[in-house]
Structure formats: C-alpha cells, structure tokens
Length: 476
Image (cartoon, rainbow, N blue to C red; front, side, top):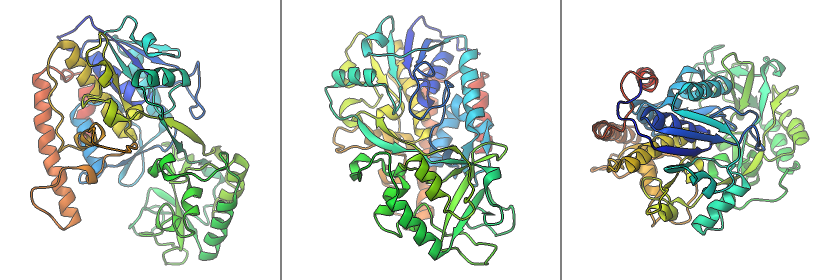
C-alpha cells in the first residue's frame, strides 16, 4: 500500500547495494518516482559475482542481535523504521549464534524481487559516469555506489568535492565447501556453550601450539597479491587481512580472530591453543566462511597455507579471499547531518550520499544510512524540516561523529558505544552501562519515530515494509 501523499518528483539513485536498495524502496513507498541505476552486471567489480541488488561480498554476518549491544541497537532502529532490507535479512537468516547471518544469495534475490515488483521503481543496469549524468532530469540524486565506485564516477565526485584522497584497502574472507572438511577434527560449538555435539552454530578448527606456530610462520611468509606492508591508515581496522595481523606479532591472531576463549575441544576436554571458527554461508550448510580470515594472499598461497588449518587439509574453496581498494569521502568535511553534500545545499539538484561511500562501515550501517537519506530527500523535496536524528540512538551517534567538521583523520566506522554521548551518571559495570545506553536509545528512537510519522515520512501501515518490520521486531 502506497502513501496517499504522492509526488511527481523524480529521484535518481546510483547503486543498488544495501544503502541504495533501502533508499529506493523507502522513497518509492513514500510515493516518489525512483530511477535506480546499478552498473552490475554490465560492468562488474573485482569482487561481485552477480547483478543482484544488495549482494554481499565480504562476510554474510550482519553482526550481533543482542539488544544491549551497539549492533543490536542499530537493528532495533531498522525494525522500528520499517526497513525492507532488514526484513529480507530476517527472512533468510542462517544459524550464527547470537549474530544475524544470512543466506547471501536468497537474501539478495528477495531484495531484488522487492525492487522489481515495486511500481514506483525503475531499475536500470548501466554505468553512471558523472554527477552531471545522474542529475539530468532528476529532482534529487542519491549516490550509493559503494566502496567500489567506478573510476569515472569517483573522478567526477572528486571534482565536485575538491578532495584528492578517497580510498583505503579492504579484504574479504574465503569460503570453503562443507563436504570437503574433516569432521573428525572439527567440532561444532558456539563460544561458552557446552561441548556437546551439535550444540553450537559454528564449526571450530582447533590448533595445538605446534600447529599454530607452524601455520603463523607460513602465513607471514606467504606471497601476497599486493606485495607491500600496509600502513594503519591504508587498512580499515575491522577488515585487516589475517596475515597483516600476524605480522604485528605471532600471538596477535590468537588474541583476535583465532582466540580460543569460550571453547572446549571435545577431543581433549580442554581449551585449544587457538581456534578458527567457520560460519555457515547458506541455509543448507553446504559452504562455510572462514570467520575473520580476510586476506591478501594469492589464490595458490591461500590453498597451500589455509589447508594447514586442522580439518581443512582437503578444503575445496568456493571463493578465495580477495583484497581491493575501497572508496569513501571525507564525511566530516563534505556532508551535512542529512548526508547531503555541503556543496549542493543551494544547488538546483541536491546530491546526497549513502552507504560506505558516505564513510560509514558495516552492512546494517549501510542499510540504516539508506533509510536516513530517504527521510532526508523526502523532507527536502517536500519543503519540510526533517526531524533531528537523536544522538542517543546508535545511528544518531555515528552521524554526529561522522558529520562533525571537528572530526579529523576520519576513517569508516561501525556503530559503537565509544562515540555515544556519556550517560548522566557513570556506571562502572559494563553490562549495566550498555543496557543503560540501549534503554536510553530505545526511548529516543520512539520519540524520533513519532516525529517522522507526524511529518508523513514513514511508509504507510499495511505495506510490505511495515509488515516486515513487525516480524523483525518480534524476532529481535
């Protein structure tokens, strides 16, 4: 059901990833005519495999669902605001302990189907090479072309912003076939669960000290695709290649990605020296992602070195890990709190930026930025003031940080408690403090949702997004 308040305004959205897909569906629900342009599969990137909307190329995990975590707070916001993409993720979840992980192909197909079925959305597969091209015939433009924005569009954006540096490096983890793994060496368990057969959602590959030290030695010495050591500023911290982490110290992975804390190997009855966790990539458990094993190793070296992991000696790789250059803009200097390019505030065609191109990091952050931009564009074109996004919410805190001109040396960031406004009174207990953040954020979110509804900026009750949001809230 579309909202009664429909307009003749036309909006061009460049990029049908998580942010672009969410912005398109939300604005279409609000009655705007959407021209969604995605260059894939006509022009493919180095990591995408399909032309589907919302294709995930790194992990299939959308992180924690815990209500008292920053990631969980963000999911509560997506549910309350009627996110189409979050509802699709909920519909295609796979077992991942306390996290939300999805069958990436089924998830992308559902988002694509929602876009194809919406009467207010026209999806075109073509490359947009310039901002001028996107603005032609449009009342507003949303750039959501993602971290792999084409060189031509990135160059056009750089001309508009006058900024030189718009890149950092990112990496994706390998995926292996389930039937190629040695079930005799792996055990199924989530952290802090009993070591009882199939109790957990993760497969674990336990290392002895000798196995671990030999593995790290080969990992550090292995041939890389981009054969240089990276400076910290070149790499987004949450996606550092495993070999870069190991290069900082032989025990570094054992206190990070390969930490054995909370695990008990049923074969020994003890905690292993180190352990790799593998998470299901699809609902049928036919393939598994090597959690936290983003890598820059060459494909032959991945095959050689990663087969040194206990249980992966004969692993068949459904996808090798890859490393690629990501593009993002300096949000604090270039974007308003509404995610509009400051240089277009008085322009005939306002330009907004969403997703990772806007300098946020994380799947749910991208989806939420698509929602935020949709509300911003709708209010701009309707000539009304958008309600102020509360800094007490997870995304509000991220936007307050990411669009503050005082923020320097900005790098893409996830939502986290470190950037949230301090509580009125200090709470020493971390669990209680996080619960207080979540309660405060929930109250602020409820007020914000009421303000959006009063301005006519929420999709009408009864449509697919609203129903999906209700289901998501029930599950959360």
